[in-house]
Image 1 (cartoon, one colour):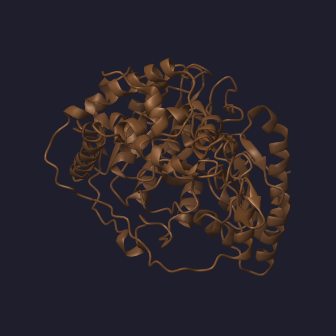
Image 2 (spheres, rainbow over the protein chains, first blue to last red; image 1 turned 120 degrees about the vertical axis):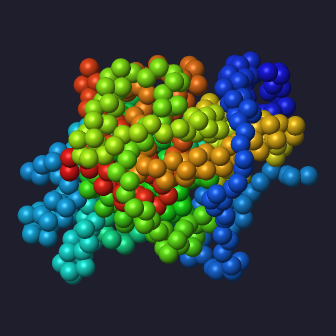
Length: 88
Length: 470
């Protein structure tokens, strides 16, 4: 099993992690377990591919209750606007 | 005094119809029981403040002559189902104060029938775990033996019903999260056919595997609750239309035993015995027990630990501290993401996000994710073939009985093994039922699992009744 670069992985996942070595060890353990999947083979003749069915893309206004709850869930806001740190 | 120990939905309905007690009396009886026991068991994270108000509405439905079998029935919701205006935390710090902005479909359907929601139950954070120890708050105890875990991730829902703190409960099952806690707490737990109960308003863990289902003390109650929520929903992209839900297969009177699956990790001796007794019970009832070959499905747990973390890593991306949930400031937007997710999410959730990010990353995708998707098709094909020979496949629900707190926390793989027998049904998308059958030498409950072909949900209840003798 190759070495897993935890800081790189954590960066891609946008997560701050502290215990790199411990995480690497547990991930390696799980990856060696799931490795058995790589040897599975057989004819693939999809039997029951369950497709996602999309709805019509129609805008419908939210109720006032929903609207108020959405606004109330903003971690930080200014009036009815969501406040975020500077993007650029 | 209402005897909550032996109460069923039908009995409660009849009593409310006759006027022996009303919905408010019944709700109060459950609230009192929760008050007595929740401090020790911690089945509920929160008891809703409007329980009596809901019960009054139910009483009015009785008075108006529009009550159904579920009107006034007190039930528990797993803390990953949206009820508008009420907190839904998925037992995570990051959603500690999050209030649902809309009703999930199951909540809406049950509310229309006048069901009474008692509260939201504890779970492993974002449903990732098999013991409820991964809750960001507190671990739930098994009401049958408080030194043992109740199973998970729907451990709070199972404990709520087992401690007489709810008549029935809803859980969600991605790899065994309804069936394994049902087995650990001596209950019936059911994972319906994928796509038959709407996931709209259920916090997504691994969307291609998640399914909502009931936990109850007997098959009758589980079936009534299931029937109320098994509906086509245009708000859910994988919901089967009513006319697609057809099952008309002739009975073979045969039950399959997947011999290949029993060679992995040692099976507990008491569970082995109960399993044999269960097979004997079917034989006594005129069924033939036959060995069936499911060699690819034997690898389902490995397939699962590729697909599920991959879907977790994408589903959890929305939890970034920007629009809702806990926000931990940083100097840049990137810091804000990393800090909010780093502090708001627990160790197991972070582990699965990282694992999924790894298997989906450039250079690893084909070896892991693409290969696992191919294997999923092979599993489905294999089950479809087997179900031409038998009515159901039988296994124990869990390879081991309820375990001690902390016993499996240090080694994630030993925890994942809880789902060895339950995960194949999620990979195949098929329905699976766990029924209590016997106890081990320490008097801890043992569960037996029955899996059937797609849409054979009703038949599984029928087969399960052979074991529960209902």
